[in-house]
Length: 294
Image 1 (cartoon, one colour):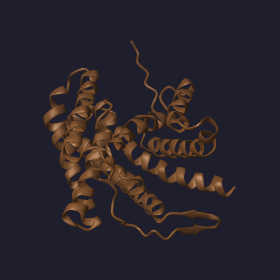
Image 2 (cartoon, one colour):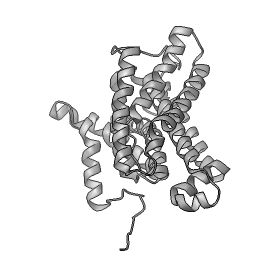
Image 3 (cartoon, one colour):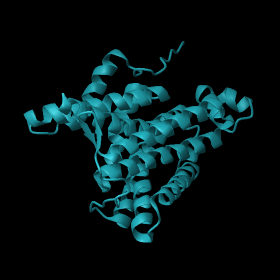
Image 4 (tube, one colour):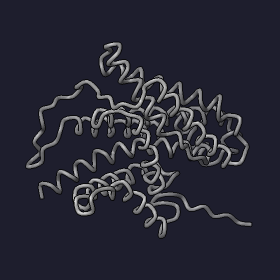
């Protein structure tokens, strides 16, 4: 039972980070109907920028985090404006292919600037384990969970009550109606990409503090895609619930099944669950079912 609870806590923490990164997929899909395959590179670049500020310039973690998030926001805004803006009005597949190419370009820059070796964050959080009943949890896990929950609450309130958040929701529902009300759809697209880059950077920094940082961290972007699809690509609550589901299943698989089969099952299980769910819920657990009349 203790081992089960340990795996459960690990799954919840990692799943919450997945949910945060999946939020980036959802925002971009809701605003432009496109899937951003460069999400993993946004995550990686934001993480490396934060790590470099801490290790090379001795900037405190909180300040480095804020600077990295501002950098990520500018990066997402600039990429949408320079690279993806020309694809507005073009078939969605064109924008998706552009994000695939963008992923390769950004990955190349990461390899050139930071190389391939694994780097670790300085000890930001206490190393003294926290005892929760019979379960021992590292403080970095608890802090990661707390930060993710705070950010998800902030974004939920932002989309529900702020003028910009309401404009983004209106644009996601009907772009033509939003434009008729004076909303700049182009600006909404840029803001969505900026926020997607920010939430990815936060997820990467948290995971980097847990497991270290190397180029393979960008694979989290591909791993999180099943989270977004599982919950529904147009559903923010779906991204949260999908992240927790995938995180817990992945943790349990790694703890119980991987030792029996020699490993590797943990990596493919999210995609197995995704296929199984989509057989019965093609739009995901909370996605809107589109009905077209001809």
